[in-house]
Picture 1 (spheres, rainbow, N blue to C red):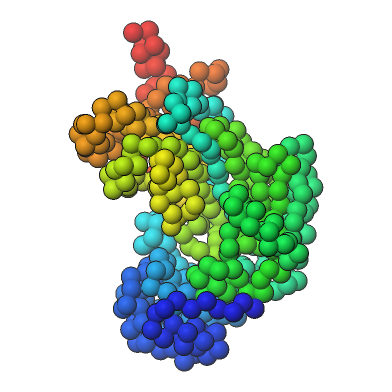
Picture 2: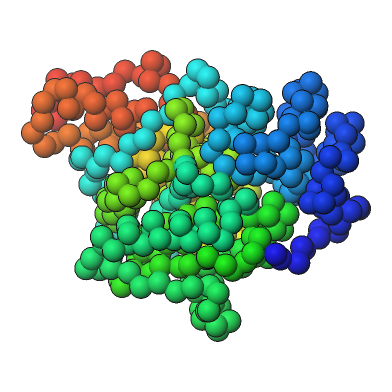
Length: 454
């Protein structure tokens, strides 16, 4: 087991020692008092539901863990956004623990699993998105696209509670999947247990690995217990695909240079199909894929494009405000805590993962990147009026995105297909994150024919 890394919070070491060795010693009032120092999601759930929390304090999860152990990272770290990690699929489904997690999900995702719906969609019909770099300049272009996807096993606990034998079971199941991949996607794999520090640093520098065992949240949540036992990285021969086995969850990344996010998505769909054929993935109706951290449930997918926006980089606050309005996440090249690069290297990705399908995420990212590149070019052509140009985008980013997605409708259904197929496609494109379809007038095929003749 790891030597714990303690944050410089008063009594953090004492709190974590008690979480691991004497979890029954925490009372409801003490937990409320500890959480008063910061503002993670669990704090709100704890304060608003005293009877439920008191009940959970006397009840173990289906995997034998105390409630306090699940919220240990939240008790110890003020920076925690959520403050809880889950030990397995059955805990999501258990009546009282399930009620707790429904409340966490509602606050973080704005999604009610009792009434809202989540569907999986890896379909790629008509998904031939235009090349963002077709008319790009050296100063404003897409450098690369990356799609991350992950899953947990349904028939073993999640990483925080997994035994060595269960990690080996997970590994063997995934080897069966990897053995079905050939050509450019054929694999070689390396164990973190036997990997040299130099090789590990190479993979960290290539953004394939991170120093997971030094992440305080994961350490406090015991997701790095017994590190690096059973942890592997699988790399494709073409260098575009890599898979982390027994990480926080089991994670797949597909990385492509330039802009071909449609190809990336098709490859991901192929891998998803093969995984589904071989592995029992942890899922629940309207939760989608389950994850150790509730932020990732649903699609467990992050699609991102690394774009150079040198003029927008000079207006980072404005860029982040526009990103917020669009419903996307903006970060630097080196992850969520890094800043936008000096040359404007900006990582643009989806924020929503629940209540939105995999295909919808890809369509959204395409629209958002197009909007930001358009804005960058306008500022480059008229830098003195950058504030005025940005103000137009800040005024109503949702309408701007609707317009971009309308262009997708105009471009895509050119192939022959039944009216039912075309109508299903249109619905899938319009049904994105923040758009309420009832408020829109979706163009019919007759509308499109009339427009094309004008």
